[in-house]
Length: 120
Image 1 (cartoon, rainbow, N blue to C red):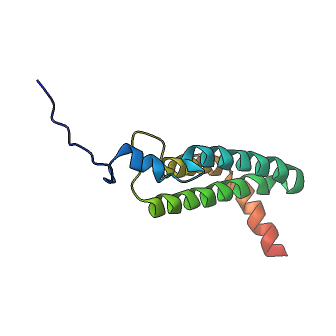
Image 2: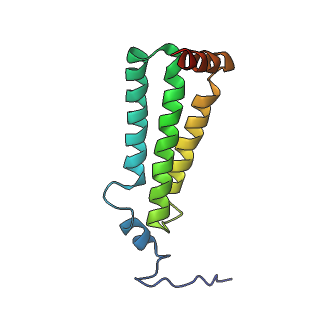
């Protein structure tokens, strides 16, 4: 039984080639790798330069900010080929990693941070 698939024209935004062409120079793959490498670098530098209580809140905030940037890029780019990695996928992955980093923050740790900032 033959399946009738819609025929995609060259200028059609649903065309896979159009989605690849709209990814831009960097694309979501390299953007994800760059975001993860930036997160690892910031994590290493913040462990050396900040108090131990501030490392994970700082890292999770950075990951949420990067996820927001990739979400904005996904909104700006519009439709992309759903069979590949999109900016929405990268934003979701960074949000998930940021949530996991935020989950490691203990309530006592946040209390110490708030108390130390209130004392200053």
